[in-house]
Amino acid sequence: MRMYDLVRALSARAGGGQIVDRPAEDDRWLFLGTFREDYEKYYTRLRRSLRGPHGPVRLLITTADVMTELMFQKKMEFADFGYLRRVYVDDVGAQVQLLPDNAPIEAAKEKIRNPSAAELLLGTLHQLPGPHIRSVLQLGLVSADVDRHLKQHIQSLCMKPTAQTVIMSPVRIPSTVHCLFSFYLVGQDRWEYLSKLIWNARGTIPGRAILFVRHDEDVLHIRRKLRGLGMNAKLFSEVYGDGAFRDKWRFLILKESEAFGIDIPLVSHVFITFAPSSWQTYLHMCGRTGRLGNVGWVYTVADKREARPVRLVAEDLNVNFVRHVVNQDLTSYSEVDIDRQTRDPQLYGLDPQYAVEQHYEVQTENPDFAYRPREFFSKPNVNKDFLMEDYTPVNQKQRMFNSATTLAKDVEKNPALVLELHKQGYLNNNMRPTKKLKRDLNHKISKHANSPLDPPKRR
Image 1 (cartoon, rainbow, N blue to C red):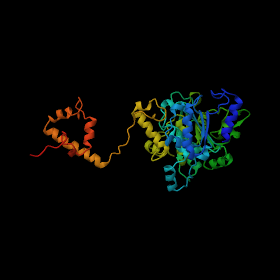
Image 2: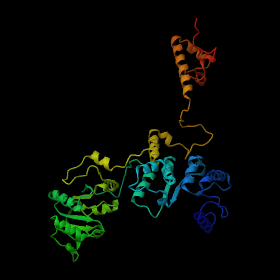
Image 3: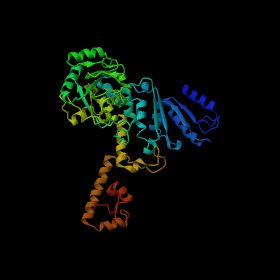
C-alpha cells in the first residue's frame, strides 16, 4: 500500500502524460489488489477497466497469491490488456523460503508438493506466453538477503531449462590455456593433496607456478605447511621488490587481490586451491598464464562437494568440464560418472519448473502451437484448440464398442450394407462415419427397429 501511494505521488509530481498516456487527474491506470479472498472483485474491476475512456489498467500492484489466483482460477485475458512486459517481485528472499540442508525428507516432499505462491508464479510465467512474449518479458527480483543457494533456486525457476548456444562470447578462455579440475574427499588434507598433485605434475612444469588461496586465509600458515611437505613456496613480498621480480623462485603463494595490475613472468602453471565464486574471478586467475601465445595449464583443486559450482563456473566460460577432471595421479575420470555427479538434478512431480520443461517439449514437437496469436490464455466463445480429457463413462464406451463390433461383422457378411448406411446418412461421400453414426452407436441397438444397425433377424 505504501508502494501504491508512492507511485501515485511520483506520477502526480511528474504531471499528466509524463509516465503514462493519461490525464493528470485520471489514475485508473494504477490498480491495487492485496487480499487473496477478494480476487474475484479485482477480476471484475480489471475487466471493467477495458471499457474505460482512456484504456485499461497498466500497472497492477498485488501479491503473488492474488496473481496466481487470477491466472489459474479466473483465466484472466492478458491479451486485452496488452503485452505483459515486466514483473517485479519485492523481498523475494522472504517470499521464497528455502529449507535447511538437514531438513527431513517429508518436509522436502511437502515443499515440492505445495510450493510458495512466489515460486509458483515465477515458474508459471515462462510456460504461459509464447516465444514472442518471452522475448520482451522482464523479471525484476529485489531482495537484500539473496545468497548463492537462493540465487541458484531462483535461476532454476526463471530460466529456460535447455542448453543455449553462445555465438560470440567475450569471456572465452584462450585456446593456449588448458583447464583441469581435481577434487579431494571430505576430511582429506587440502595441502597434502595439492603437494602430491604438483609432485606428479612436476615433469610438465617448465616454468613457475602460482598457488592462489582464498582472500581470508593465513598465507604464513600456508607457507609453513607447504614447506613442511617439501615445497619451497614463497610469498609475494619475498619475490618482488624495487619494481621487479627476483630470479630464483619456483612456487608463489598469491591472493587474487595481489595479482591485479602486475605481469608475473615465466608462469606456466596456475593452481587454484578453492572453488571460484564467479567466472570473472576464474578468468582473472587463469589469465596469469598462457600469455603472448605461450601454453599454460590451470588446475582447480577443491572439495568434492564444490564440484557442481565449479562446473557451473567453467561452463559459463564454455570450458568442457566433464572431460578434464583428473585424480591425484593425473588420470582422467569417466565422463559419464562426472556428468552424473555434477549435473543439475532432474525435475519431477509438481516442481513448477517441471511443467515449464514439459511445455517447451510440446512447443518443440508442435511449432504451430508455440506461435498462436493468443498471449496467455485462449479467448472465450471460440472453438477449443486443445485436446481435452475424455470423461465418457466406461459402460457407455463398452456399449459403443459392442455396437461397432456387431456392425463390422454385418458389413463383412453383407458388403451391400455399406450402400444402405450411406443412403441413411451414416456415411458421407468419402465413406467415412458421420456424427449420426457415432450418436446411434451410443444407444442400444434394440431401440432402432428399422435401422441397419439392427442385428439380422433369425428365421
